[in-house]
Length: 175
Image (tube, rainbow, N blue to C red; front, side, top):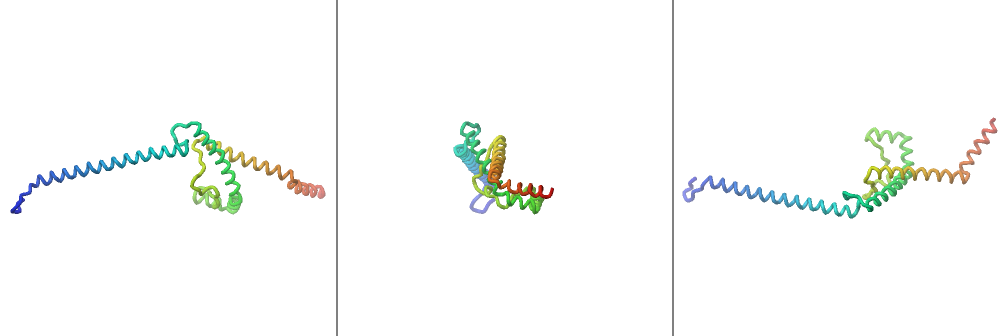
């Protein structure tokens, strides 16, 4: 191209454009590699922090992790029992009114409106299959123990004997 004063070599312009594009691509690749390295380093650091906070987050478990899982089993099972007791009235009303069945049909599951232990940021969790099984055992065992103790206390005070005695009297009068 001739503009009168200057001569521009089109081949040289294309070559310079390609060199500039290569430099830009190399710079972009360098930035992406640095960001990836930072991300990987952050993941390693987060794993270390998680392991310190909860030893069950490490790849291999030691005594601390087993003790922590045991604590989660016991406290989680007792929390489940407390939640069952606290939500019993609402679950009973919902079952009798049909609300429970309606919610199961609509959403596939049922959850009471009042969940005293379901909405906080730090839930008690077990991280193993056997931890979940033992947590369920603690839950139902403590629920059964509470029921048995309540029944024994009611029998010892005579609260249960009074209605039973009245029924026996009514039956003997009618016979």
